[in-house]
Amino acid sequence: MASTAEISSKPIKPILDDDDDLTKRIDIDINAVVDTMWKGRSQAPIVPQCEANEVLDAFIANINQKDEESKNPRTIPPPMAGKEISTVVDETVDIISKFSRRIAHPGHFGFIAASGVPTDPLAFAMTAAVNMNVATFMSSPVMATMERTVISWLCQMIGFDETIGDGCLLSGGSSSNLTAVGTAMAHKFGADYREKGLAKSLKPGEQPVLICSGATHFCVQRAAGMLGIGVDNVIPIGGDENFCMRMDLLKQAIEENPCVVCVVANAGSTTTGAVDPIDKIADLCAAHNIWLHVDAAYGGSALMSPELAPIFKGIARADSVTMDLHKWFFMSYDCSAIVYKDPATVKTLFDEKSDVVKQLSLDTFSSSHLFFHLGPELSRRARALPVYIAFQHYGMKRLGNNVLYHVQCTNYLGECVEYDPDLVLVTAPSLSICTFRMVPSGLLTNDKDEDKPMIDALNKHIFGRIEKEGNYFISPTKVEGRPVLRACLVNHYSRVTDVDGLLETIKRVGKEWIDQNSPLSTTMDKMSLNGHTNSN
Image (tube, rainbow, N blue to C red):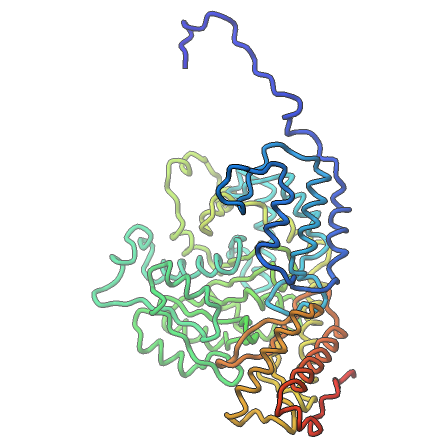
């Protein structure tokens, strides 16, 4: 840079071309765009039947410039010149409409994917408009207080003392569970674990282990791998007939392993919806001073329903709880909560003593809003705003009634399966998940080993055919190594009539497959495949 002595003339002010001004108002009707996208939510197919190159071609077609000299004809060059926003939006909406999985379709019973409540587009636009980095109270007083408010509501829902309990909103259950296991490490090895590290925290010959249900989500194993515990040192505990953690096996595992870092209990497994006996697990953890983390990423929303909350007896005794707001709380991605009964331990893990923090000159209130002392993120968007608006508008009672309705619909599905001679319940409905198989009566029997390959082939075909037809979607999964038909109700657009339609489709598709597969077709007169379902 030139010195003052070298500057011989008055500095010339730079001028920004009016065409380059980024502050100009975008002339677009957001409501109209959202309405256009939502109009297609009931269209089939739910899962688009497309190849990767087909989707890529659609994007390439929308780029103004083509890199003629590119050696890779599939490369999308960055757009150097802009387009009218209406054109960009129209083109983008067209691509989304053609190639997106329609999770808001009332026939979407797969995975655990909520469709987002109608307040979300507005709330997310507001989030983008304020564009706050909610790292501290100082960086965003309103949004920091809003997040503390939402966490307080979740604490009360769980049964934690909201004057002590705390937490923060992260991107997903994987991040929340990772943070919880990391906190359990700090609890196990002491306040200086952060500085000393794992190697210096262990006694000679000591091996840390993590204990969880055999049905626990695989992100817990990933957490063990990332934190140095090691995937091989995750001890899965077998389940009972309902796939809930067996207490005798848990007690044995704790007694055989002197360095248990954490026990992770399920409050709704993602495969069957199983809920572990949290209260009894809490007894064991308390007796051995072991951190108890409850993964309620899927099932936690049931706490909004007074009728369902007792299912999670003992959850208030957990040290930490994961709850995904973007699952059965009906929020849009991404928003997961990690909630602590007492945040003291997590603050030792994330305590930051850098000069930057020292210079913040925080008072007591502001220092309680340091979210980077509660989780791994520094820069964080205002995730609480959409949740706050939705909770305020719909109210816990209304949201909880929708959760309860899904459980009632799932119980109805289970009753229909048990009533139908050609369907077999694999796991009894738990929360809003039901797994079952088609096992045609009079032809195949579920207890004969020689029939299992045929039954498995039939049910695999049913899943694939239903996805291809596009009116319904169920998750591909296995229970005890065998394929099952799994329906999960977390979509607030779904109704009990959609459950009837799913069953009718399963029966029809199954009959068509059997008709085409000799020698099964020669004994069709023995079957009762008439598309019957219980409509009461």
